[in-house]
Length: 377
Image (cartoon, rainbow, N blue to C red; front, side, top):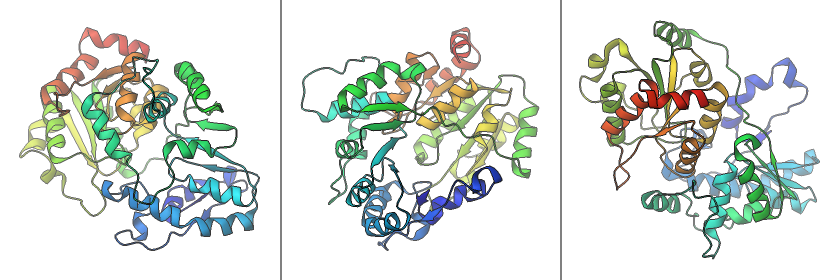
């Protein structure tokens, strides 16, 4: 496993366990120094969004270091992810085959490739679509950094014969087949790769004790992932939606590195006092897999990142979808298409509406129209 020291630190303890230590070696890749990108920013976890392209550039500039690692280790195969297509070129230069591993769903990748082609043909799956404001946001998010020579299509072409995709045929079979035809490569679904629940600490015990007091399926878990951060306006909309829904909630709020503020300052004035024991707000991190398996959880207010989508599928928790950017809107369409949840409607400019959030939460947790989602989950 080759990555930056800060990335490897997040899995180091697990890899030292007896069942892994003899088969997994951690190899540090040191990135060159760039302005505004100190070592603690050498990860997408908590990275301020405006530095994403800077991080990609730093990784690309580290290719000589990676080539030296390859010459030393001489592996049989290199598996590279979405952010590291340059690794395939490094591998090719020393005659090592490279295969891409995509952590997006097959439907999303198919639509992205279809959109990049100069064709008037419609995408063959009408259930997967983008609103105009989502299309604009997607184009801005995937805009390549100046000097970046690896487009999305180019990264896929570099993959030798097959592409590994974090998905399952159970619900993406037709998208997998379509993607295979699009790129003329075999698509290998590797499953959901949902992490196991980790051992609890005192912080986790406090959360579990709070959940233990709630009735079955009476509570929503609210989290928008580790790589997206709500604006002040969005935080207020979500907060008011949760308050108006009248259901119990446990909400994880994250801030970009270097921009942390107190929970009290982030929320509307007097909010925590008004919701009282009905709500728990946590800053930073919570044991998501453990929480989703708790019997009091009846819904997941989610940005629809692919990993969160997979966890909901595994643990049978209906989704209240609030997609934010990149692949998330398309994932939210899949959620509704397979009846795993309901998307909270936005206004025509794409802004969250607190009343819609409240109504959608109640629809999934309280009203009869949510029973289908629960049964499907």
